[in-house]
Amino acid sequence: MFPKPIQKSGTLTRNSYNILVPVSLVIWLLPLIAIFMTSIRPEGDITSGNVFGVPSDFLLIENYGRVLVETEALKFFWNSLLITVPTVILSISLACLAGYALAIYRVPLPFVSSNVAVPLFLLFVAGNFVPFQILMVPVRNLTSNLGLYNTIWALILFHGAFQTGFCTLFMRNFIKALPYELIESARIEGVGEFKIFWHIVLPLVRPALAALAVLIFTFIWNEYFWATVLTTDESAKPITAGMESIKGQYLTSWSLYSAAAIMAAVPPVLMFFAMQKHFIAGLTLGAVK
Amino acid sequence: MALSSSLENREFENRTFFQRNRMAIVPWVFLLPAVLFFLVYVIIPIFQSLWISLYEWDGLYRPDGTWTAQWVGFENYAKLWTDEKFWTSLRNNIAWLLLFMLAVPMGLFIALFLNQTVTGMRFYKSLFFFPFVISQVVVGLIFGWFYNPEFGVVGQIWKFLFCEEVINIVGNVSTRCSVEPPALLASEEYATYGIIAAGLWPQIAYCMILYLTGLNNVSPDQIEAARIDGAKGWRMLWHVVLPQLKPATFIAVVVTVIGALRSFDMVAIMTAGGPGVGSTNVLAYYMYEAALSEFGFRYGYGSAIASVLFMIMLMYISYFLFRMYQDERGR
Image 1 (cartoon, helix red, strand yellow):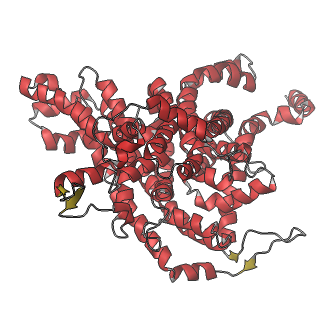
Image 2 (image 1 turned 180 degrees about the vertical axis):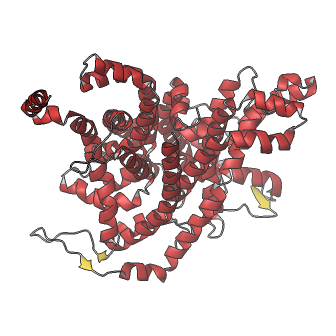
């Protein structure tokens, strides 16, 4: 273990470490703490300069309630959910199939029959790192040609397709690490390829599915660029893009605006705390186990 | 012998096309949906954008459905060469790249700081990771307010340090400051650095978590052996621990480079490219601004900016793919 375990040092070091950790945490999260404090203050506190002190009144329920009632926030939340959940399902389903094929089979090109499993895999990986702007104009056109511009389906289809790259990278590596003998012996028993996938491989990759699900949920919930490119009004905007119009509404009211910002962050935060282990396993790309 | 082989042949021909080519077809059946989606939404658009960057186009079609674009060849790129805003964006992107790299050592530092088994450590670690889970939009909002010279935390600290309250004869309270509080995001010179600092916050958290997982895997035997040999502190870190953290460092550098070049959300939320003539612009945001400009769409010009950004990114992608390809062959 590095650095040296603190238990082996003297009492002084140990105690100061025990104090230093929470103190540095408070400094680290200062922006967040400050904005949370702002979100439960009356507006008057801020204009009179009471930004750090004890709020003159605790308006947790009032402020957050007002945001929900006065703005389109609930609609934006609902849109975010309607976009995020189908995206997660779409990208993970596609990636399970593709990852399985790339991990287990030779993938011959028709007529040439050279194995393209690795090049295809690298194509998925590469696409995943491309800057969004190079896709913007064609994807925007495609979306409006399909008649999907300014609908949640515009975002679901695009995100589903794009995240397939990352998910395939992850699934393929995960399936590749499974014992190949399992599949081979099933084949000798005469089990069909699709049954092998469904009854043998899928149950084994459940941890990977969980990791991807939380990760993609968070990515898509927090996504902003495509939300502004592919949607324009309340009917389809997710919460990230919706913050803009909430800002317009609360131009002078920092406390209500902060409340809205904090609410937008809650679902991914809950997701993270509920599924922490899976989340981190996903983030490290499985490369650092 | 001859008989049996011709018998086998006949049997072979009697099988359907699918049966004969089963092992060639099955993988493609599994791959088809993903490949199709990925081609349509990711791979083909890249080439379309490169192509569109050679045209001038306002995004419209004629009533009969034909394209209104004008072929201009490399003119868009020639315009970029003399476009002051483009160079500002490029310079800012380089600043992002260089300063964003700080996230890697800072993440390592926090990871080392927290790599202890004290009660409640798991909880502390996840709270340190917190900023990464929050949307960049929200991080941008938080810091936009944090930097506010009047109400924000920076402004308040400034007042505490440099200002004093003055009560005039009539009894009105006002503050007089020896140095005016900085309006960071309104300064053409410093606003970019303010945004980068805000962007570093979640990025450091990301690097930290990569290193924490990496540190879990460092072999205790090697550390013990090095300790017996008298290594400690920096020497231990540099010669024993860091080499074992190589995979974590690699991923940390890759995601940080990608993050720096993708910076869009923060710029859009905190300054929308301003103040002044795009002083905080980055290529990603300038592309968006140019292509979907209020004064008429400029898809061709926007695509040219995107293509430049893509080419920069491509260098990193190629390096990453090269490394991965070598790993694949090494297996």
